Picture 1 (cartoon, rainbow, N blue to C red):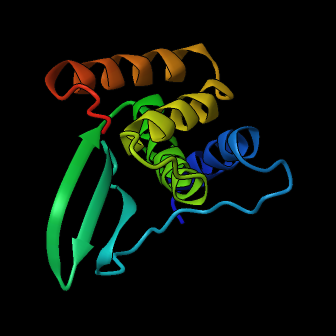
Picture 2 (tube, one colour; picture 1 turned 45 degrees about the horizontal axis):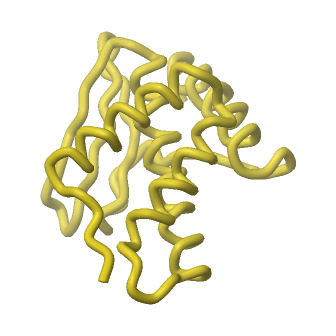
Length: 135
């Protein structure tokens, strides 16, 4: 593993332990799994968060900023944890995003202000375009 990815792994583990489980073992994929999941690559200049499925690249986010890729990775992990939370605690006739967004915000707040503020802005933009629809 490259030194950059090792350093990134250590920071990611630390953030995930703050967010989810202090005793957890958190690692990210470094090679494509081709199942829709993401992996992280470093090309010597930039980090890439890439999702692939069946040999096709579905998405790619690229940055030179280590904090940026850490945000993307922890944000995504927290989102899927929030979705699981909503599924386990579903409230009928309520837009599922209400609970998902609440839990997502709660989880990312554990990482500190920068991550929390960014997520708040993203959720606010989503809700501006697509307000909650209960019913």
